[in-house]
Length: 372
Image 1 (tube, rainbow, N blue to C red):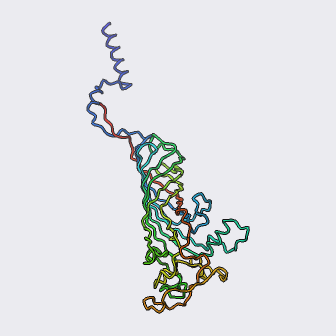
Image 2 (cartoon, rainbow, N blue to C red; image 1 turned 30 degrees about the vertical axis):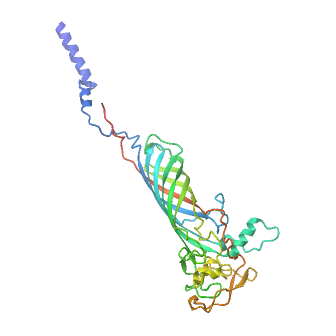
């Protein structure tokens, strides 16, 4: 009887263990044979993920042909005029190394930012400045190609990788950039003395190669500005989570520049005689007496009160000058040889607003590790 009871108890205990999967296995031996690898955890993902993004860019220029040269101006226009490509890699939760390429075009005229209203005796400084720009009549466009590298820092860092990122997260970007620019303008058909410029009216020409401040004149000791420049970008933005692998970023980037020549003007008026037989450079160096704003396609009306003349000092009989014009220059009242044609107090400034779609390359699983 005693033996029967022992056998029954043993059999019941075996059935209980089998029911709840209690198995006698040497798990320590199995762990010791683990060679390392990813441990899946669908709630986290790779904490050091990579992103790529494409953006629509809107550029605002502040310089000698804008309503205000101040970086704190509120005169912003949100018109798409470029695009951008970015790639970033998480270095530490909330800190990304980001590289990018941006292309944009700026286009401005004194006619559009100035005012033809003659300032009265009680006019403000801004009203006087607006009229002065309108009378000066410069215009330009510039295509800017930028490569940047820097750090993007989330204000709310996430330790859980891409899948646990916050649905809305403000961030900042700071870095360095190098860019190429090439200001151009539409040429008039004749210079201030009536010499043909060799261009059709409205034809676009490269201003850097012409030297509108006399950079290529033997009479002046001036160096041309460089088309390749450095800048310091600082951006503020917000990330909005659209889906598991997509974000939409809104970013405003302020670019501190080390040049005053995005618009090709940053120095003094050159003496019109110094251009010699370069009638195109002479025509583009001072444009106050032109009857049109070529960029805007607008007639400037009666200019009799804002133009003046002075005699040509060159030997017009010299065949090398190829002179077919008259004996006097007709120019705007702003023109004084050797005086500022633009303020040299501030460098140009660029603000780039971007709407960026970001795709997150997030590999499943956590980082590799080994059990010891």
